Length: 203
Image 1 (cartoon, rainbow, N blue to C red):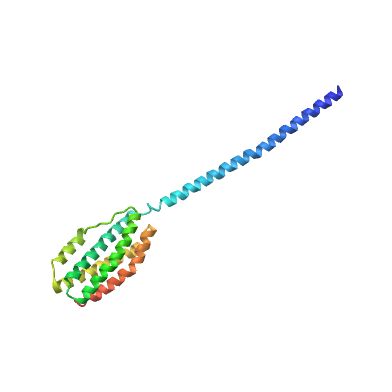
Image 2 (cartoon, rainbow, N blue to C red):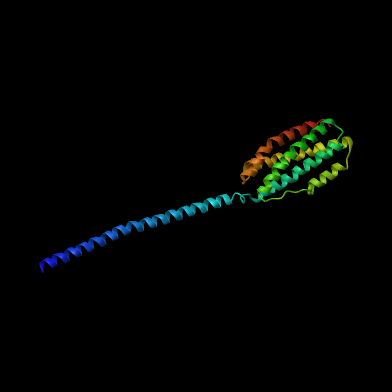
């Protein structure tokens, strides 16, 4: 009997040890599984945040940014069309030279802006409207020295507005692409303004 009791006790002890090992072995697995889930959740959350940030690039333009792009597009279109008009109607050589620069520089800037606008899902005007159309129609009704003087006067006033608007956008635009384009174009507009003033004083 004693031998059987000893054997039974040994058997029970072995079972308890085995159970204890299973519990201890199983516990780390549960912790590991929970850790893996936490890591996956963190990764998913980070991915969602990244996607949100990159997805927001397209919609980062404020109404002010959009208004600036729209006005810049219309203004650039007007500069090119009025420049072409001046190449036909101007009689002063300096006015013609200025007009040629307007066509060249603003055609380039317009192409850059059109590419930017397309990337942002915006459409630029293809025809003059509002005050720009009125100014074009007025200039078109003039000729000779009268045209030269009126055209250059308009160019000075127009570029003073442009420089102020581009200067503001180059520092305060929310969209990085809009801010970058405004800053890149601003020095050229300042040169246009100085040339416009110089040319206007000769007619």
